[in-house]
Length: 158
Image (cartoon, rainbow, N blue to C red; front, side):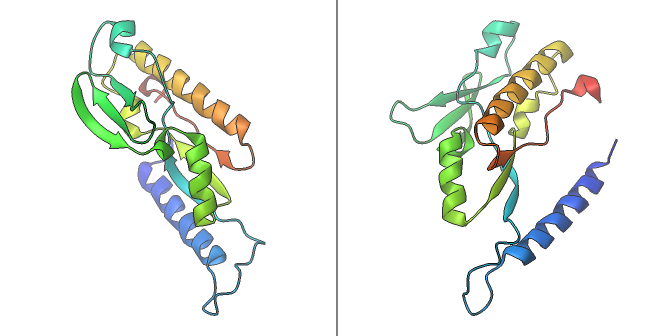
C-alpha cells in the first residue's frame, strides 16, 4: 500500500509539471497544446442517492438537499447543516463549463471525503463505496475524454 505522503508527493510533482507545461508565456501567446492541462483533484457527488438513515437503520449519513431552482445544494448530516456546495460538485455539466472557462482539458474526479463513511458498519460503507464508484463510472463513461477517476474504496479493503 502506498503511503499518503507518497501519493501527495507524486501529486504535487505532477501538478507542478503540468502547470509548467500548460502556462501561457509572458508574451501572452497561446499555450503549447502538445501538453494537456489536467486538474488532478476535483470532488463530485451523485446528484441524488437514497436516504441512508432509512436504508441502514441508523443516522450519521450525509444527504444532499438541492434547491428547487438549481444552484447551490446543502449537504446535511441527518438534520444538521454540514456544508453548502455549488453545482460543479454534483453536476457533470457544470464541471464541463468550469473546465472550458479555465482551459482544463481533463479533470480527475473523486468523491467528497466525508462520503467515505469510515465510521459506518463495514458492509454499509462498502455498499456506499460501490454506489459512489458506480456513479463516478457513469460520469466517466459519458465523458471519457474529459473526465476520469482513480477509484474509491471502503475501509474493509485496507
